Length: 163
Image 1 (tube, rainbow, N blue to C red):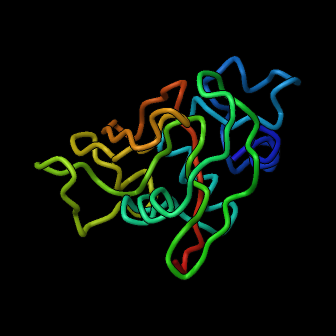
Image 2 (tube, one colour):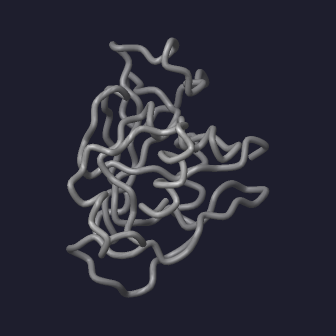
């Protein structure tokens, strides 16, 4: 999601300000919001009546589309809004890594059936969340982070609760 849309959530009091100096840059209102933690990402999705994608939803979107040619080494504007379909979200390729509601597993690329519900009280300090994506160049990156930690290059995309 872009900075302009995230700002609406901050003004409504449902979201907190991202930990990124780029957020307040008026030249970057159409750029992906970044510098948010998993709690902020979940709060934004909740404000929209949506939720964070699962790893499987994120992957379904990733492998179903190819990005158009864009600058591959710098953050660029969000080109279109994420839409959802029966098979899951589309257009999750982007310029920042994105939080999911899937927990880390013992084995890389193994899937847990238990998912984070987006609430602060249920976000474990010891079980990190899966973060997917990175950039147009490294779109399939897979990593794990504590959902309470701000990382400047992490952002958010939301999916419909019914997906």
